[in-house]
Length: 329
Image (cartoon, rainbow, N blue to C red; front, top):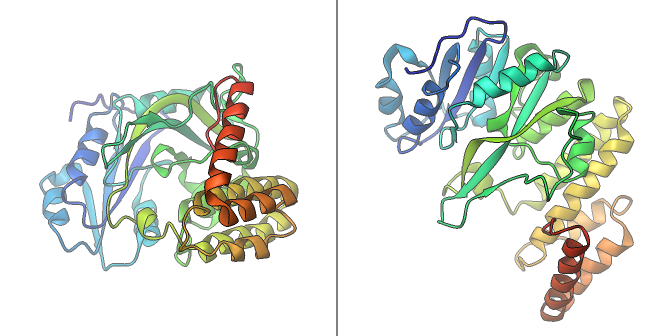
């Protein structure tokens, strides 16, 4: 391991859930071992893999703590890693993704400068596995990042309402905060990471943010949970309804409704060109959140797809010009 050892006050355990990722997991582990600031421990939880994942991880010997469990899902695997972790801080990495060498060092320094923060995230790069061009997720000219004199969002829910979507592989968070929020929900069939982040935000709304891209998300692996569940409208609706109720208990109804509107609008626009997906459930279940303009847009896009595509493409191009070249729809 080339990393310099770290004995300061921000000891970090890295948790990597793994399922049939023998082709990729060594890259993920090497990216942790190559950090300029060493992790205190690397924990890989094999969620019942049937390929050579166990053999690949085993080849790292004592440098990696290896936990095997019957196939139970990513939430159970991450929870097992969290429970096994000995450090105060937890960082997550998916087995088919990787970190850049300075990820832990830069994020730790960020937290040291802001000692009241309980969790933080970083920018990241998306590299589609189909060979499409890679891109930095949040370029400053496209998104409203924290003001120059701040290194955090005052409320994670407001950040989501403005278009922010966290990747679990960028998160560094206190272990006790995860425990207090109830860990990853094992019954959550989709977006278990977003579900946890919302529950954390009700208790600790302020979230640190590092503008620099420090992780690489190799997006689009066949068989991944994201790919498998992408078209399930009901699960998305269930997530919103669950958190409308939870947010009300924490006095966070207003910020979460703004957050819900952003998510619902994004999902509807993503689904509208998928004729096999019935968007009526989403429109019906959230009549009190979705404005008339969005409902009309969905009807026009479905009823007149050719004309609507031309009209809305021009509309969004005009919006980008007015905003200085930014937001994609």
